[in-house]
Image (cartoon, rainbow, N blue to C red; front, side, top):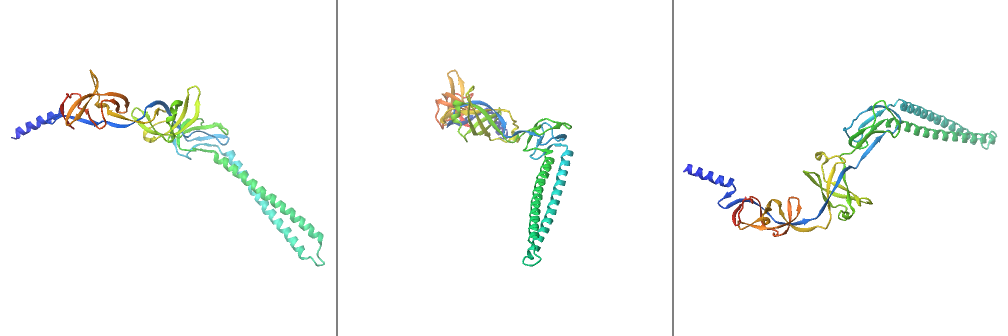
Length: 361
């Protein structure tokens, strides 16, 4: 008995492995669907950096050190290069000394003004006595007025010296050239020992964490690209993502009759590995969205009489000719021959015969 049971199990297993059971051929099925479709036009665009900058020198001086090279990733505030600060530090020391001198002048002028104020007050107290002298009071008032003016001048001198000191300190700080935003060094323009002037380029920095897609779309097709609309973008052969229309630039190129469209892709830049100026294909909608009947591509077979599918009804597979339209990813648009909800065979259909019993896997 055990031997017979084992033989029976082996026969059943072999039949199942070849796609056949007592209930019929084993098949996979999929439902015919009614789903929205939009005809699209493929437009080649490219990734563009939202931030790309030539980082320049902000003061004159010889290059003392360059901390980065091409390909380095940096964070905002990282040191890129340093200039020699001997001359700038000397200017800062001089400005600081001048500020100290001006503050000393203020202290002296303050003491002088206080002294003449005391003279005026003392003479005023003698008014009405034989010792009071109007001429001496007038002289004391004039001296005090002059002292007040000198004090004001000294205070203004302190303010000027403070500004000069701050400017000198700012130039010393500018000798350290730092990254204004995170990114990757795409070019390096200087090396140690070179003398740079204000505005000379040091490095070019590209923010590879903040990219958009720019595409030149035919003017006749931009009507379907409203702000905020989601469209499909094929980044590589194996990667397609959704992208949101951020802007449609209202300027048309008279030669190509295109307008620039900017899109924000739903993309993890770290794992996707995309780069600025990398191409991407944007599927631009060219007409309004409509509902169409679709079928899985694996269900469609080609025969002498044209294309057909096997429709499963009550466990029986029957062939049915179909008229196929546009390709929609892994599905075809159905122009005729099928209705939404019908089950069609998508795997195991190659060897089926009309009216054959099937078992859904």
